[in-house]
Amino acid sequence: MKAEIISVGTELLLGQITDTNRPYIARALHDMGIESYHQSIVGGNAADILTTLRLAAHRSDLIILIGGLGPAVDDLTKQVVSQFINSSLIPDTEALRKLKKWHDAVDVEMADNNYRQVLFLEQGKPLKNDFGFAVGSFYQSNDGPDFLLMPGPPWEMVPMFDHYVVPLLERQYLHGQVLNSLVMRYFGIGESRLSQLISDLMISQTNPTMTTDAKKHEVTIRLTSKASSEALAENLNQKAAAKINTLVGDYFYGYGAHNSLEKVVANLLEENQQTIAMTEVFTRGLVQSTLQNALSQTETLAGGFNGMSALLDLTDDEIELSGDNGAQLVSRLAQLTQQRLGADIGLAILAETPESNGQHDYVNEKVWFGLVSHQERLLVTSQSFAKDHQDNVEDAIFVALDLIRRHLSQQNLVDRA
Image 1 (cartoon, rainbow, N blue to C red):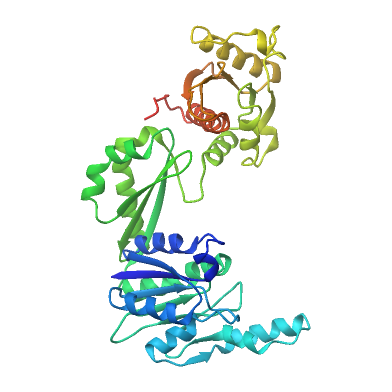
Image 2 (image 1 turned 135 degrees about the horizontal axis):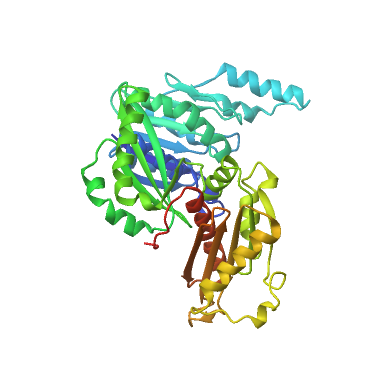
């Protein structure tokens, strides 16, 4: 099964708007086992759209067009497709009722061209638009490719695709099988190293499929399985996840497409009824603010300091931090932070004086992290960063969060990979 994705819109062609729709659809199709070998952008010109359709029809089984379903003069997608497949356009009565009701509610006379939005391909299936008026269409052909038409605005397209198109495609092309996806999240390991460690599994594993994705501060693995029931598909993913984590489990921190390291840490703190205080000389309160956004209980954060002078009888400038005394100083600072603020956990983050590496604004910064708890557990680690200062700070925030997570989960520290 081969799909082709075509975005329609002159504003896309001119680079005035970034097209987020095609990547979104391509990822979802891949999860369903439908591959997208060709993608393109075409302006709102009837002749150009027709030329693109002729090319796509020779090489694809499903042609997906996004955009050009509105009331404007250059919204021509439905009209060109109907001409191409020799089908009429007919109104969707429910969508027309919704359109008229809205105009009555705002006391505005409906322009005639608005009627174009509720048209769909005759003998096809109209697709409901919950957040707009432009109706989508799914048309199945007996002697050519199938057609799927959706609106261009992402806030209309994404809900339509998720709620109506995905179930339709599953029924149409998966022959009764159910899909289940599981996202696994990893911190402290790069995509290249992770892919190398699980390469044998990725090659041999066909159900579920495995794909990796490098985010800014982490790597994810998406497992997608097919089975005759949701329970069986979920079980396939869980078995594959267990195999993966025998290889890279030291870096695994959680499941979920919308999960995050700060959410996991916040949940662990609240579940264990632990309070935490911090001294952030390098990150200047950003670990606390990041964590605060994920917490439901504000009392979990016991407070903190953005410098050492409040805890030591020396100013920040008078303290010379080096590899010889970094671990000792950050440990002492974590202990003082915990004691002064009466928290269950004390965290400290310090950095050596940065050195420029001569590349743009990049600086080499060695950062020390120390954590102490009432259980007399002491964790100390250091990390060298070599990006621009702001990126180094962002990376340090997540190293600190992972340190807290490892303490609360009783996991050992590991080297970054």
